[in-house]
Image (cartoon, rainbow, N blue to C red; front, top):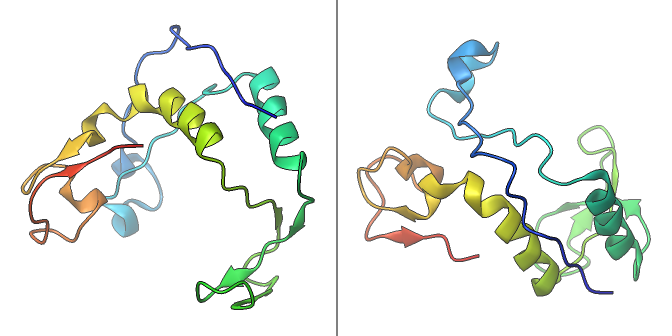
Length: 133
């Protein structure tokens, strides 16, 4: 199953969340988040779900503590949900292209950039980080 979406030209870039207007302002001051409303249509969401379900079943989400398949455990007090893990470069590229117009400020991050802390502790970034998809 191949995923294809038409470009959406009807959306402007989403604003960066202003944490100062939230109850968690102290905890997340300086953090980066965006809410991108209607990024995918209902039909596109259905296609994403169908793609995920095309070769796997929903399973209890485990907490992984290593790279091996057996290095995981289920703790429903911490994570109580089901998921499908799908590693699909083509689908990821389609999703990346849809998100890209909304994260233009993250395309290239240099030391001292206002977005440096998205990828590194303050003052620790060396060189230029590039978002490549």
